[in-house]
Amino acid sequence: MIERQSQGIKYFAVLIGLLRDRQAFLEEIREGTRLPSKIISLLVCSSIFIAIYGGIIGAYHSWMQALSSAVKLPSLYLITLLICLPTLYFSNVIFGSRRNFPQHFALVLTAVSITSVLLFSFAPITLFFLITTNNYQFLILLNVVIFALTGFIGISSLYQATSLVLEQDNQGSNTRKKILQFWLLLYAFVGSQLGWTLRPFFGTPDSPFQLFREREGNFYLSIIQAIGYLLGFR
Image (cartoon, rainbow, N blue to C red; front, side, top):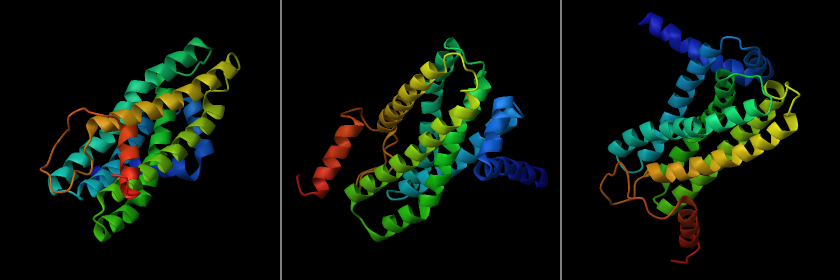
């Protein structure tokens, strides 16, 4: 039991190291220092934080939805990462990067971890509105804003981190920077569409629990409809 607690503390110590001294953390990734430990720690910590947030938004509907969302939300981030990461890695290698796959994986996980910490920090705000309002469309849009904001900050941190970790290889650096910009858009698009596929995370009020819904429409159309509902266009 004590050993497990010690291991858990080590996981969070790695995350704290990233948050407190990102420059040194990224330098270690560039040098390939303790990559397996970093990858496992960031995976564990980010999954826990995202799962907590998922459980909170799922509790709006039922305990079953809370449990489902606590599993599906971390899966959303991880699956999106696994889908998009090979594109980033092989594109960089083709255009001169000398960094290996674990280094790319650890680098992208820093962005996911920062996003997860921000989501966790928004959890009390989300919980407050879940308790004080029953407006389903408002809660949906509130969380779209939260996910967009935290995702943007995470992606921005990733873009800045590449200047230290990936751009040290001068050959093809300009091309790789353009590839990264395209990849960030791809990552956001895949993530939003995958989130739509894995829905519901909230669960529609007065409806039975559903693990997944039928695939219809898309994420962007749903947001437009939610805005129209709040503005009175039904």
